[in-house]
Length: 223
Picture (tube, rainbow, N blue to C red):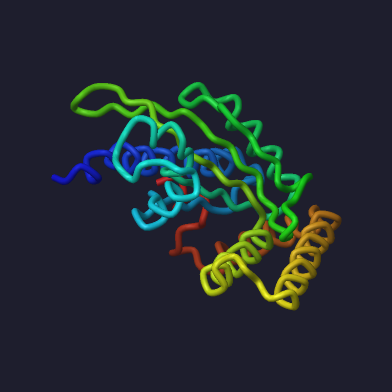
């Protein structure tokens, strides 16, 4: 097993465990018949190429080390998607209250979005994993955003690779306009939140009644 594989192993474990725990939070809302603020959860360990780019940016040595783990808080990354902007504050509070991780940093790019238009809420947590060498505490980044914010961020990320961060002025302006349009969409959806959730509940009940042999989403999530 190579040095990088050994170094990244606890981060992979952290991502796997945190995905299960965060998805478990979603399932618990279903058990009590409450609307979940979490739509879905994804996770990944930062690829070596991205770690290398970060070391260049921060002036660090590209080698497995405690300093690297301390300086890069997003080697382990989780993303929580929410339907509504208001759900984001609910999720952040739930994470702050947990005893199995400790929040060490928060960055609010929703209230204070980046000049590019990027919006998301970032939390860096310390999370302990049990390994055969004993307990190891690693940093993990949890990004919390709406589906609209995530769509915009995914497009911007792809374009960033193409232009290496040097966007033509027209593309830059259109991205900023698209970010504002996405946020206005989020605000509009929030204004009719109750109607949306009632419609979703009705649709779920209709599907279950029409297909008695199919498991409902709630039942699948709790298995």
